[in-house]
Amino acid sequence: MKTVAAASAALLSLASVATAQTVQSKPFYLVLDCASKYNGSALVSCHEGAGIESLCVAATLGSNVKGSTYMLNTTTGEVGDKNAGTPGTLVYKLPISGGVGESEPMQLSYNEASNVALPLFEPSTTATLVAFDKDNHMNIQSYIDDTVVPAKTGELAYYRWYVCKSNYEGTQYSTLNWVAGKYPPQNPSCEKVEVVRKFA
View 1 (cartoon, rainbow, N blue to C red):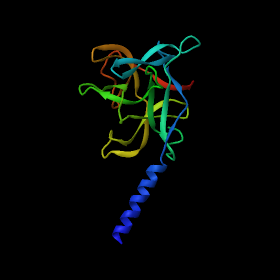
View 2: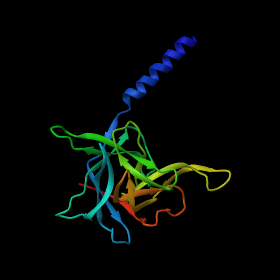
View 3: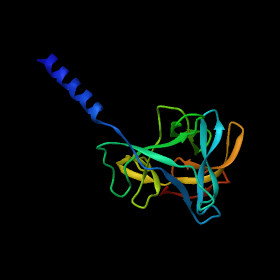
View 4: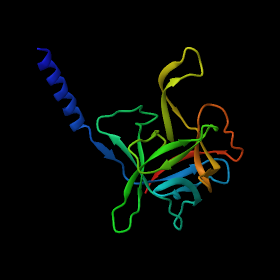
C-alpha cells in the first residue's frame, strides 16, 4: 500500500511540474521616477563582463532615446498580492550575432562589506525575484520582517532602489542598485529612485 501511495504522489508531483509553465510578459522599458536629475531616465543594459550586464542610467526616454527592453517570467497559476504584484524573474535578452539572443535572468550581486547590491544579468539558473505593483513600480517581496523580535511574517513589498556610482571589477557606471535592510546606503553617491515599468 505504501508503495502505491508513494508512486501516486510521485506521479502527481510530475504532473504538477509538467503543467507549471513559464509565462513571459510583453517587452517593457524600465524608467526612473524620482525628485532628482534622473527623473524620466531610461535604464539600459551595459557591459560589465563576458555576458554580464548591469542597469545603467541613460537619457530621458523619448522619441530619440530608447531604453533596453526587459520581460518578466512568471509561472502559470501563481497568484500574487493584487496590489504588490506577482513575483517573477526579470530577464534581458542579450543580443548574439546571428541568433535570437540569450535570455539572462537578473540576480543581485552582493559585496559582503556593503549594504548596496548590484543587479546583474548573466547566464545563470538562479534569479532574484521582482514584482510590479498596481502602479507598475518594481519591488522585491519578503515574507519575514526581522526588525522586531519575534520576527513578523506576512508578504511585504519593498522599494529600496537607488542610483549609485558603482564599481564592478574595475568598470564604473551610474547604475541601479538595491539597498539591503532599512538603513541608508553606505555608498555616499546613492540617490533614491522608483523603477517604473512602461510597456514598449
